[in-house]
Length: 403
Ligand SMILES: *Cc1c(COP(=O)(O)O)cnc(C)c1O
Image (cartoon, rainbow, N blue to C red; front, side, top):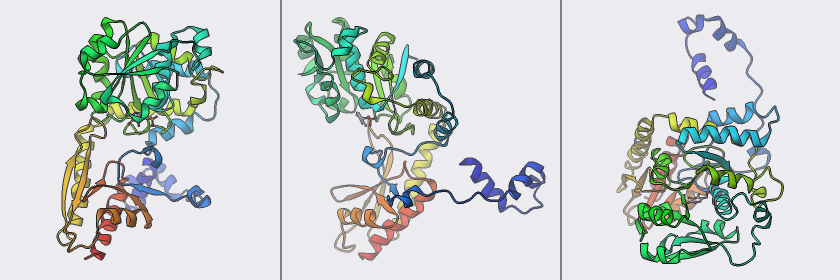
């Protein structure tokens, strides 16, 4: 992709330019243009969407980086032993994240299933074979009452029972011989009755494994290192959110014995609970490539670029009478990045955010944004550079029409 941009740039330079003097460049310039690529969106009549929101699974997560596509394309021509591949990719990811072990899962949801399964079965093949139909008593997983969320069904999928607790004392009292794990939902940290540190301390005291779901909690990049330092045994992040890996990939990392057990519960083994949650070879390479770019990129520069995008759209929209915009940063821990809040006097600009969203979505190109009460929220972090002005002018036109 980058290469094509460079070539496009070159074609508008005068031929006398020093750059063009190079034989290689001349050769590429005289090579005929490739035939137009097959357009699968058109072929299947699928609507391409501009995501002016946040990463959402129903909207296909995030766009894969060129390096991820390179990893996928360049590795698709040879077979690989999937045990070896998971060994090597997992080993490299563990090194990059300063943990004992890591693996690529089919998303954070799969990581929760596999992490819970690992805590239940260890390396016991008979238990691995029985899951989720273990004989009574059911294994128990502790969660704070205020941390219950939709994704904890991935815990119950293993046959484990979730036991809700409140406060450190409640947690301590709930631990018994059936307790296999304690799960912390990081995005609910502000609603916690038990802090991260207390949670880990109590669990360790009773030899209970700890798991933290931080699926959508980068940026900041530091979060990829934060929870292993706190002492959590298992950690998950989605691959297809702000890390920009394959949507169906995710990371599970932490203690070596637990990753070993998680892998025994996963594909390419034929029977276990994780077998239907296969990750293909290309996506394993792709997840590695995405993480490498993510760790090495200039996060400060990216952040400033996001702020500039939001300001740019804001400046365009404020040319409409009464429209006010504000660049806001979501406090996180999930989706902690800038976006643009847009408000207006609805007696002068006679429309509301709900109707604007409908107009954006049904227009061409189709744009998905968000709202909160009377505020239209325009996300900027998932826009391609060429989509920034498209979004600005579409929103402006819709508001202008209502004046
Ligand atoms: C997105 C998300 C998940 C699911 O992750 P996938 O990678 O889509 O499987 C789980 N937990 C939280 C908190 C999430 O935000």
